[in-house]
Length: 260
Ligand SMILES: Cc1cc2nc3c(=O)[nH]c(=O)nc-3n(C[C@H](O)[C@H](O)[C@H](O)COP(=O)(O)O)c2cc1C
Image 1 (cartoon, protein in one colour):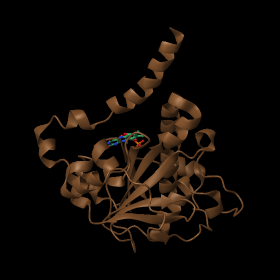
Image 2: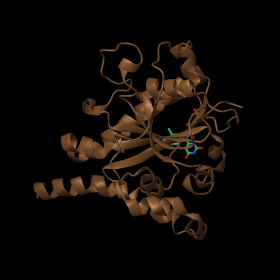
Image 3: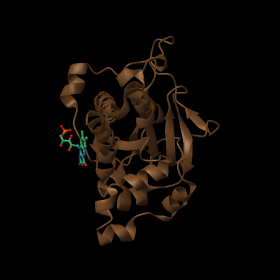
């Protein structure tokens, strides 16, 4: 009886994840059925989940040598969700600071010998990966990228202008398509599960939550507008990034830009 309970609980962690997927109920709406799965997403879905191409072009950021001047107290006091973005492009190095300080290696910030990350993570497995959609970032071609922590740079996944996709299909929150970039926080559940079994699910969400709060606080310190959203179509987004949605899945999206 005990064993049965254990197996059931293990399945439930995975089932819960699948059951909390937005896609099935969203797809019941006729309007979503019409607009869902644009051409390029269909193309990507045919390719299936992909391993990251280690030879892909990478655009490196400068090493972060100077901390934002705002105190932690002020960053906490100013932190807020803002859904209004200026049309001014996001500065490349500022974007690098945001990604690096939020979830990069400490060696990219100060101590070159410190291999740990700027966000805590369960078992130090760094389960939270950051993917980026560049919509309006200075000197960055529009498209999808993976933030390569080791290189402190953006590794290209696919170039293209995905603004209409974001506006109509991805988040159903058209104002977020005016952001300069979207950061997709993806949980590497497979990595966590090898150590923690079904407990990986809660740990992965907690890891991503820590990174998200870092993004909020660093955005406040860099005077950037930011908002998180849990409203996206899981299958479509995961497939676009080449994630299988189970071992690797997006759990939160953050829109970033210069404030109005
Ligand atoms: C996990 C999470 C999911 C969120 N999802 C959405 C969302 O789908 N749409 C949205 O407009 N804001 C979303 N937000 C932002 C919250 O609405 C916002 O944090 C809340 O209203 C408090 O406002 P504040 O961040 O300015 O303090 C989300 C925030 C978090 C942490």
